[in-house]
Structures are given as structure tokens and as C-alpha cells.
Image (cartoon, rainbow, N blue to C red; front, side, top):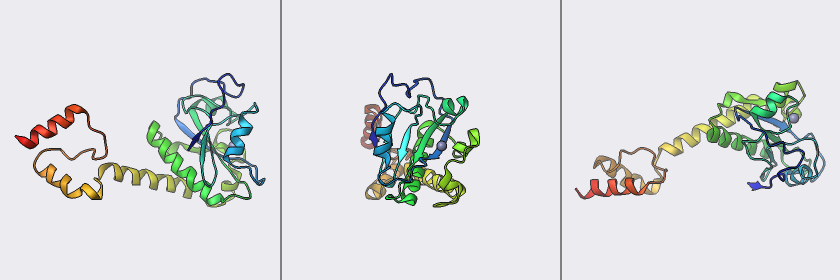
Length: 205
Ligand SMILES: [Zn+2]
């Protein structure tokens, strides 16, 4: 992911609060060759009267605004101040399916980071009736329902990863649990110095 923020003070960086309860999915509506995420980052810095948080193409994600700031992408004040906006590139020299697949991963990451339920991922259409994301609303590369199930798969996959120890340490992890050195929770989290001492002392007692 590339972070290339719209400068503070730009007219399309209003800077108000975004409550981050929803994610709004768009497509760029721009099938021109080269109309990828980098190109849209450039466009947003030229001061148009629109803005959003992320543009996703088939190989990258570019972030334009902090998640916690409002943006102008839904045509409604409510949508602009409660949702994170994602634009998916439809450039003809890109791979549309790869772009939407990548957007599903980004949605899962944002859902996890901000506690947004997958049910609150909405189309731009939800806010003001616009036919956006037009490609997906026409079933290309797949339906919005399929998109949501991909997001949920990523969320479930991440949950499983978070609660399962890595293969290389599995045997030692189980032994440490059996010996009472660790309670076996949060295998992938960092440990504080206190937790390290507690585990060492349980091991040598
Ligand atoms: Zn839109």
C-alpha cells in the first residue's frame, strides 16, 4: 500500500470527523488506459471537488486521506461523515477481477481495524441512488453479494490465523500450554516485559 495523502488545507480535504461506521464501495467510472490508482492519486492532488480514502487497482492500494477524516464521495453528508470511501479502478489495461479481489482484502483489513461489521459495507448507490459501482452492479467481475462473501472469508481467515500458532512453533507451543507456562491465548501478539518474566518464572519454578 502506498500512502500519498491529499495535502492538508486542500479544498477536497475538508478535515472533518469521519465516524468510520461504514465502508462505501465505488468504481472510478474511468476505463481509460493508465487510469490506475497512481493516476487517481495525482488527480486528487489537482484539487477536484471530490475526495475519498483509497483507490485500488489490480496491483496496489493508494491511500489519499486518513480513515478518521471525512471526504466527498457519496453525495450525502451522512455518507461523507460516516464512511470510508474506496474507489476500484476499471482501467482497460488493468485486471478488473484482481482489483475487486484486492478491494475485498482492504475491506476486511478496515473492518478489523475499526470494528466495522461486514454488513456495513455498502455501495455508493446506497447513499444517493447513483449507479455506482457501475461495473459490479452490472455483475462484472462478480456480484456485490460475492464481493461481500469474499470479505467475510478474509475476515474469518484472519481470525483463524490470530488464534492459531505458527507451524514452526506448534509443538513447543502445545508443550508450554501443557506445562502452564502460557495460557495459549493470542499466539501472534507481542509480549510485554511483564509477560515474558511471568512465562520465564513459570518455566523455572
Ligand atoms: Zn461512486
